[in-house]
Length: 416
Image (cartoon, rainbow, N blue to C red; front, side, top):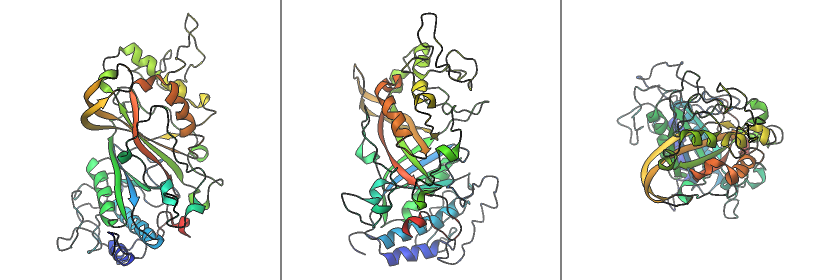
């Protein structure tokens, strides 16, 4: 081991001890206190990664990592280790390198154990590869640049962005989603521990989802229903097809954006102005001028003065597929609340002071971010009425490869 990096031999030893899912070690004993909980277990193996089309869980813990391994073999071993551990974690089991799984007090580095008895809580772990994994600082460290998908572009700087470097980018991503926040955090915590010496955390963001109402649509911190419109055809809009490299076919591209909302400013706005800004009624979620949440947007409707019922720069108009050449994205956003800190507001009078560091962890999956998120948000960042209350402060873009079969590891085709 040199320069703080974990040697391939050490990584292989950890991978072998985690379990036998990919044939690296002896079978691990399931956690006795978790039992068989198939109702609250989401499948780990399959043609697509779980956590994308999975029914959205109540909590998320999104983590981006920098790779500090210096050779391709150690990177592969890291992904093998994580795959083995993820299969165990999503089934409600623990991971301990020395014991082969389960909680073993005699193990030198046991699983932290804070999820004992909690069960899987519908945990999913979705892995992604960032642009800098393929080339960083002009260096092709892992001989992967030729296999970088064209769609995996570096996100441009949008109007109004105030990206914080320590909350932006990353070479690997893991989105843990679960119905219990401790289960989601525990999963990332264990993956970070198992990857020590090969990958280190760059930024993390926790998030929560309000319980859905009778219509099944949660509300965000602005009090509006969030997620009324959803993708219509995953095969067309979510999953990468023949246009992508073979290792990405059946995968998807995720864009995560940490969006701070100036709640103090928003809370002083009249209800009518809030509704005009969004383009929907706050209580029912119906488009302005309509009665029901899922009614079509009346984008051509005008009032008695000839003005659009839904303003030209209302949020829902600018996000609608009909105004974006039919582009659709799969949204899986979560609210976040990180306390308070000192900030300067984006718009006049540019007030300064201690304000909530709270808002939205916007997460979306798509077939091609160039024609989806980037195209949609480029326009929204310039004229959306909501911009006077929101600022994008972090996030990243990652290519999430297809799902895995037993015996495979995440991204295996990329290294074939």
